[in-house]
Amino acid sequence: MSAATAVGAAPTLSPDAAALDDTTRAALRAYLQALGDDEMLLGHRDSEWTGLGPILEEDIAFSSMAQDELGHAQVWYGVLHQHFGAPTPDAIAFLRDAPDWRNAQLVELPRGDYAFSLVRQYLFDVAEAIRYGALAESPWPALAEAAAKLRQEEKYHLLHGRAYVERLGRANADSRLRLQRALDDLFPYALGLFEAPDGESALVARGLVPPSAALRAAWLAAVVPFLQASELSPPVVPDGADGWRPTVASIEGGRRGTHTEHLAVLLAAMQGLYRSDPAAVW
Image 1: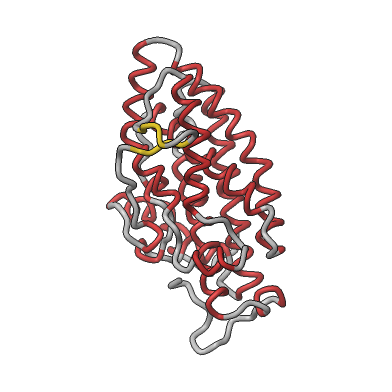
Image 2: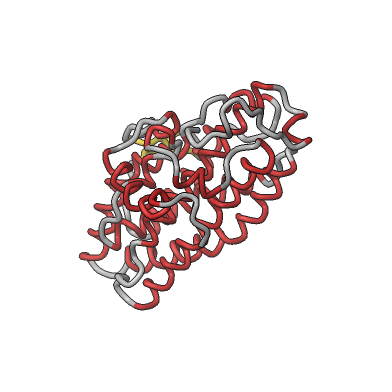
C-alpha cells in the first residue's frame, strides 16, 4: 500500500491483529484491501448515474447504492486502519496509484449504458451477499462483525437488482437484448470477483475466510437459474448434478495489481480534489 505509515514507524496493531502470525496478518490485510477496493470503485461508478438515471426512481436508486458502497469501503478501510495501523480510510482511497489497487477488474469498467450498470450491480451484489454471509461466521471478530453489518445493506441492493433484471429480461426483445449483451460482456469479469487475494490459502487454513472457489460455486448456483428464469442466457453448461461450469475464461489480475486502462482514468477523476490539498479539512 503506497499510502503507508511514516517511514521507519512500526504500525500499531490491535490485540486481535497482534495475536495473528506474520503470514496470516499479511494475508488478512490483502483480503481486507480487496474487499474495500471492490466497494470503493463500484461506489464511484454507481455515483456516475446521479442525475442521469433513465427514470427518477433509478436515478435515486443508483445514487443510494453508490453511497452504500462507499460506506462499505470505509468500513473495510477502517478495519485496516484500526487493527493494522494502515493509513486513514481517506488516505487509502485517495493516495494510491492504480498498481496498488486490489479490486476485481469488473468494478473499474466504465459506466456503460443502464443495462450494463444494472447487470454489473446484480452480479456483484449476489457475490457480496454470499461472501458476507460466509464472512459473518469468521472467528476473527472484526471481520465477522463488519460482514454481518454490511450484508444487511447488500440485501436491499440485491432485491433491487433482481427486480429490474427480471422485469427487463421478460419485458420485450429490445430490453432483453440489451441485458444479454451486457451479460455477455460482464460475465468473464464477474468471475474475476473470485480471484483469490494473495495469501488466501493461509486464511482458509485457519478457518478465517471461505475459499474463493467455494464462493464462486455458490454464486453460479444462485445467478444461473435466476438469469435463465429472466429469459437470459449465461455462458455456462451443467457440471454434475447441481453445478455449473462457465464456458468463458475468468478475467483476473486485479487482485495482484493488473488493471485495465480504465482504472487510471477513474482514479484521476476520483482522487483529483483530495490530492490537490491532502491536508485540507472539509
